[in-house]
Length: 208
Image (tube, rainbow, N blue to C red):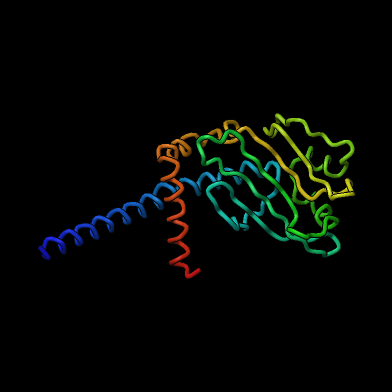
């Protein structure tokens, strides 16, 4: 009887190990490789609205969002951190992808607005931010976003603290349909689990 129990436990352990190993392989070979390529492609497309430095990697890669942050210097040598966040569109049910440029929490709006010309590539968004009263929030067919919005500094609409662009996912992700289809073949709850698994594994081996 004891031998049967030990054999059953050994079988269970081996099965669990095989499941974990298989999950790790899929999480890196399919999930990480595909999601990283999608993020890289989105980075290139978002260069039309924000100049993300090539040397700046994402400071955060999540299932729903990717975040970049870097420091900018004004002509007066003042420094401020800017943050660019965009949706990933990994969820099959998501139809809109939003991208946002903002200053760091509790940052100086004056400095943020000084560096906008060097950061914002979209002339419509830049001119709107510089002249909020005559801002143009309409869709931009050339770049492809359907909506532009600005968040001014409370009590001072001459300075903005956030610029948001809204895109149709189907338009923004043209050319990457095959990559998204590869992810959609995995049930979303399983995909989320595999995405978290590769993140945990990377952190464990990096010592973070």
